[in-house]
Length: 182
Image 1 (cartoon, one colour):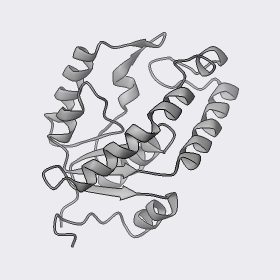
Image 2 (cartoon, helix red, strand yellow):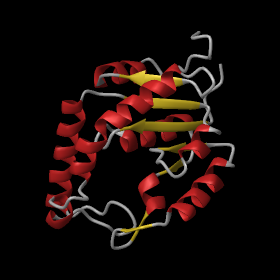
Image 3 (cartoon, one colour):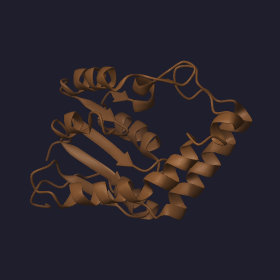
């Protein structure tokens, strides 16, 4: 069995996509392209969707990569090239608690997130907050992950419904089953 060369890590905000992508990039020696760096310019200016799609398509044409998310304007590009999707389908409370903890830490530290951007009280308390996105997008994200996992025409999907199962998989060496499940 060969290691996957093109991996999409997907899940709701706060599920741990970036953390897992960084770990797998190191484990499989793959280049990791943090999606937030491709979608946001300084000052939290969103890159136009057509440009996002161009950037993602350029990465997906490569033979080796890991992406930590796939959004509506270009999700098809990633799914058309991925060897593996790792879905983090945790209960709402798990991912929301993680998101709250991460947001608190970023507010306290002033940590740079992407392209010089930082979380602020203004961004956290706005209607465009990542916390609001979590609440409003949770059900859609869950349905999407489960549909991908059930679709035999798409790339293989490893769906983790709790962090302990992911930790166990990682401890066992991140073995990726082939399409037959072996």
